[in-house]
Image (cartoon, rainbow, N blue to C red; front, side):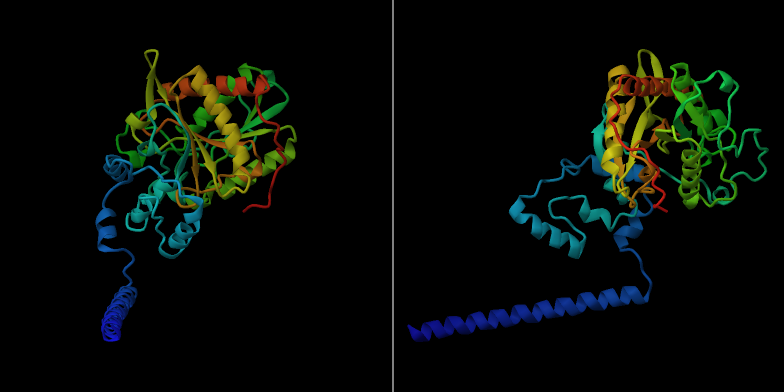
Length: 382
């Protein structure tokens, strides 16, 4: 009996030794490959290189066909710490299949966006995208463009300014002021959907007009950020908003209007025989108080759904992995970013949806539905 035990113990020790040798060999192999890759300055795996040729749209459609791929499994409390350690060490959450590919697919950061409220037919393949303009427009987008008489005027008046409500409580501006619409520019390439004169600024003017028709005093900044490098536009527009807040203590709501970079199928809906540009509410998770901003966005989304079902695509929360991540929303809990339509929408469709949004906003504001949040400026953020 003792001899049998010693034989089994010997076999166990041999197996353990073999496992240790194999593990050490694999570990040294891994570090050797890693060092070689670092030496050659290789930044992506072969899979990453291959998938870098694919667009975000292609990836979304491809993985959208995989059942449960966008389903995040809830982790039991007793296993949560294991999942946390695993994700910290490897970057992979075993309960979330999306994290397996995040490091290998260059455009997969799009899936870091959370859909807080989804409009009709909306899933991860509908997440709004923010693509920068061509490089030649990023540093000097206004070069060769004759200025409007209102351009660079922070508090630009409209023709009906004298008749508008004196108490301005809404402030509208455009961080990406050159975002435009292909049909209005008579172009077909989405990379060319940028213009200084024909742009989302016209949509902002329309929103001001519609809100003031309903007695809601609105101030519109028509400012152009001449010479500001594209990635720094949010810093520039933040200064504009803070200046306006200091000049007018009555301002309560701050709306940054953009348009989506997606194509027509994803940004348009037909309602009662008319085409509407769909509206997205974007919330930045880097704002420490983003939950307050989210409440307002949800109110507006819900009201828009009641009045014009399907026009709102929903409320999306983004972090620095996909977009700016803050969007000037730490300035006030009533600061929001909305995207109206996309590159293929017409100005008629934009105006139609802008009017719909104005009605939803008026219902939330005038009927006292807006949450009582503090709108004092926070200028501690960059």
